Amino acid sequence: SPSTDTITSQVNIISLSSMDIYGHYQKSQQQSCNARLCGERMKFALFLKVLIRCLERTNQTSVLRQTRLVVLACIRGHKMGDPSFFPLDEAIEMRLKKLVDFSTWEQAKRYTKYYLKMHQRRVAASRYNAALPYPFVQFAASTADGGADVNSDINASRVEQI
Image 1 (spheres, rainbow, N blue to C red):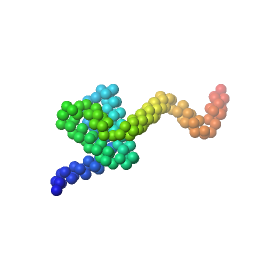
Image 2: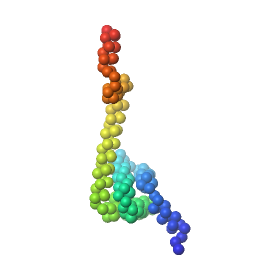
Image 3: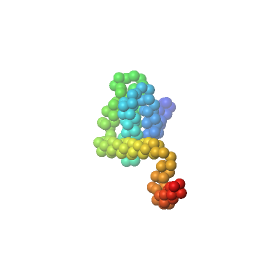
Image 4: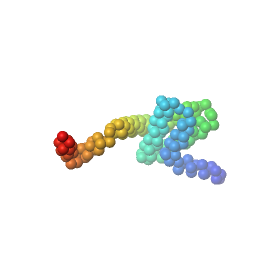
């Protein structure tokens, strides 16, 4: 019969969520990275999370379980200093490409690209709004809502000032 440690480790691996893998991978990559390289690592970590979600939603349970095992094995090998697991993201990608079918892989790439594009737009919009003076932001928000006729109030106040 299998030992308690073996059963516990199997249960932990099977119950490991995509967030746990993403978080663990993210922590291991925070040690040393310049801006460009760190950005690529974070994109791959996001891709990995999206890939796991795609596998979860398509009910590919055996591939999902194997994917989690591959990621954990790569993380362990990387921590132990095995040169075949350096760089970590390339080691994981190489092994997962052999495991996951092409259509699921490409779907995860498309979802990741879409998410990054939307995130970039949100960041750009928030920077734009942060750069605007406060009254203008209120004015832009009220006119976007189709609120009361703000222009007539502004023109009336200008007339009163003259």
